[in-house]
Length: 498
Image 1 (cartoon, rainbow, N blue to C red):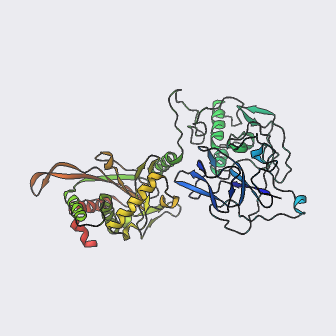
Image 2 (image 1 turned 30 degrees about the vertical axis):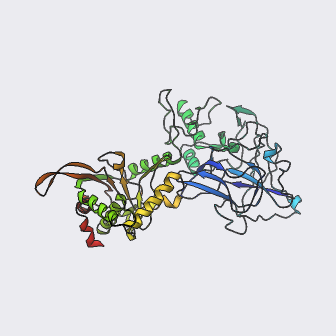
Image 3 (image 1 turned 90 degrees about the vertical axis):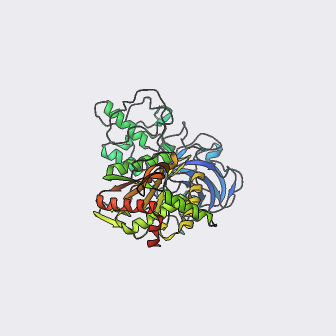
C-alpha cells in the first residue's frame, strides 16, 4: 500500500529561518520524481527552487503563493510506494479526511519501516537513512484542495506527548478564530525558531501558556511579542494574554516591538504599516547590527576623474568588450587593498582578533525591485577589467531577476557602493557587517577645478570611505583613500601594480 510522507521546508542555510512561497511548480495529483523542484521560495537573500526528496504522487500542498512559512513547516505530502496513483487516499489532508499519519507498528509487521530519504535536505537525500526523530501528532484540518499554511480554524488541539496516539483533546475555547487550549499541557512546545525561545526565556515567559497563530498552532515571534506587550500593559506581569483583539492586518506577525521587554507601541493609529520582511527586513537587520557593533568613521575627498574617463573611452575605442566604469573603480580598489590590507579584514569579537584576508571578495551595491542587495565578485583581485565587467553584468542581471543564490550574496570582504547612479554627490556609507570598510562613489559631474595652475572645467567625483576604527586608525584609512584618488586622477599609477 502507498505510504504518505510529509516534506517540510528544509533549512536553506545562511541562518535563514523562514521563506515566502513565490510559485508552486506542482499541483495536487501530479507525479514527482526524487529531487524534482516542487516550489520556488523567496528568502531574505534570494529566490530558491526547493527539490522534493521523495518520488510519488502529490496529495496535498500547505501554503498559498505569498504565504510565509518557517523552516520545518510542512510544504507538501507525497504518496509513495504501491497504490500511489493520481487519487488521494482516504485520510489525506487534501481529501477532507483525518490527519495524515505514519503507519503503526502492527501495520508494518511489528517492525519500524526505514525511510529512503534523510529528512529535510535542500538537494537529494544526503544520507541513506533518516535521522531518528519524534513523531508529532498533527491536528485535523478542514477539507480543502490545498491546505493553507495558516492552519484550519476547526483544528483540534492534539495530545503533546511524543509518540502518543492520534486522538487529540477537543478545544476548550477560541480566541480570534484560533484554537486555544484550556490548560497548559506537558510535552514539546510547538516552537521552531530559537530566537522565539530565547526571547521568551529572557523575559520569563512560559511558552506553554501561549496560543500559536502559525501553522498547526506554531508559536511565532509575534505571539511572544504580543504576550510581552500585554504583560507590560497589565503592570509588568508576564503571563499569557487573555482572549482579545490582536493587531490586525499583514503587519501583525511583524510587530513593532523588536527588543525584549519593550513598552507597548505609542504609534498613533492610522497610516500604512509595511512589514519589515524579506530583503527589506534583512537589510534593516544588517544595517542595525552594523551601527550597534562597528565604531565606524568616514573620510572623503574630491578627485578629478577626467583622465579616468578618457582612459575608459580609449579602452572601449580599441575594440573588444566594453569596459564599465565600475570595473575600473573595482580594479583601483583591489590595488589599494593590496597596499592597505588592514581594510580587507574583519573583527573576530570572540577571539578579540582582527582577521586580514589574503583574497578580495568584492561586494557591490545593486538596487533592484526587491530592494538593495549586495552581490559578491569572488577573487576580484585576480580579475582584469574585462573579467570584472563581465561578472558585474552577470550578477546585476541575476539580482534584478531575483536569481541570486545565497552564496552569491555572502562572503564579501570589502564593498564598493556607486551611489552616483542616483544623481547624488556624496554620502556616508554604512559598513556592510562583518566587513571593515566600504568605498562610496558619487556622481561624476563637470565642476570648476584648478588644473595645472589654471581654472578649468573638469569631471569631478567625491569619494567616501567608511571604515571600522578597530582595524586601523585614520592614517591608514586616509592613505587608502588618497591612493584611490590618485589612481582616479592619474590611471597610469595603476601600471606600477599590473
